Image (tube, rainbow, N blue to C red):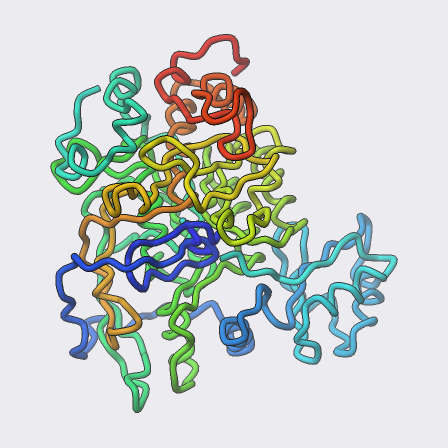
Length: 511
C-alpha cells in the first residue's frame, strides 16, 4: 500500500504519480492510454455539499506536506481520565497558551481533538497535556501514510496471486461469500456515484472551475456499495481521487465471472467505503475552494489519525464484519489502538498492512504492530510470486501472517498485484491540470497494502461460513497457514501464507 497511502503507507504503487497516503509508494508505468484531461469544460453539476475541512485544518495539512511532518501541526488527540467533567477538562486545557475550552473540542471516540493556533508542534502540546492530572494520554494527530474459473480477462493472464491461493477450488466451497457480510475499506475512498462535479483548481495563473468526472468502478456493482462515508473531503458522495482504495477493494471483492477486469476474493460481499485519506487532488481542490492560489507538493497524501479513529468506529457501528487498514506509520497511537480494540470488541475482524519499511530501515509500523496483542486483528506481511518475503515488507516479531503483495523484482509488472482501477494518466499531478476519475483499466501495484486485503477477503468468506468471532477467524487463518521461511513462526512471514481452502474446511475452532 499502501505506502498507499501511507494511507498506511505501506504500499508501493506501480502507477506513476499514485499518491500514497501513508501506504503506497509510486512506481512508474508506461502502458496507460493518454489522458484527455488538459482541457477545461463547463461543469455539469455544481456540488451542493460543504467541504469538511475548514481553512485552519487545510493549511495545517498543507504545512505538514510542505515540511514533511508526520503529524498535523497544532493538533493533538487527548484522552481524559474517567469521570472528568467539562470543568476538569478546562483545568487541563488551561496549561496551554491558547487557553482553549472543552466546549470547543472535537471528538473521535473517547479522544478529544484539540486544534491550537499558538503552538504548531503537536509534540510540545501533547507533552504539556500529559503532565496534567486530569489527562490519561495525549499524542500528536499523526499522519498515517490501501466454484468456477473466472472469465475475467485479467485473471488467467495476470492474477498469479489468486491462482497461488487456489481460489477456483476455494470458490467451489464458498462462491464469493454473501451480501449480508460487509467489509469496510478504510482508505482513500471508493467512488460511490457516477456524476460530474464543478470543482475549483489552480490552472497555473488563476483559480478556475472545471468539470471533475467520476464513475463507479465497472468491476464493482454499485448495488454492493453500502453506507459510504467521507471523513476528509466533503459531506457528499464518497469519491476516490487517489485510486488506492479502489485497488484495495478490488482484491477484497471486485466482481468475478463478469468478463470485466480482474477477480476479487469475496465477490458477493457488500463493500463499505470509508474515506479517511487524501491525495494531491483532494488537497488541491480544498485549497482552491478556500481561494488560495498555487499547488500542494506533488507527493501529497496522508491519513490524519483522528479520521482513522472515526472511520474505524463508524465501520464497527454500522454493520461491518471485517475492516481492512492498508495504511500506517512508524509512530504509535493510543487512539488508533483504542479504536481497533473497540471494533474487535463489537465483533469485527481487522486486517492491517504490516508496512513497507524493510528496505528503508525496517522500522515497526502502526497500527499493524498492535495486532499481536489483539485477538481478532492481524498484521499482514507480503510475499512475491516466488512465495518468499517481498523485499519491502516490514519484518519483526509482530508479523502474524503473509499474503501475496507482489514484487517488481520478480518479473517486473508480471510480479505485481493487478486489479481494475483508475487510469493513472488521467489524474497524474505531474502532467494533468484538470483531472478526471471516470475511466478504468488494469492497474498493477505492490505492497503490504495489497497483501492485507487478501486476508480481509478470506475473513469475509469465513464470516459467511458462520465463523463470527474475530479471534476464531484469526485462529483459523493461523492454524491453516502454509509455513514459509524458517520453520514455525518467523519474523518475515509470521505463521506463513494464508490457505483459504484449508481455512474454509477448518475444524475445532470455536465460532
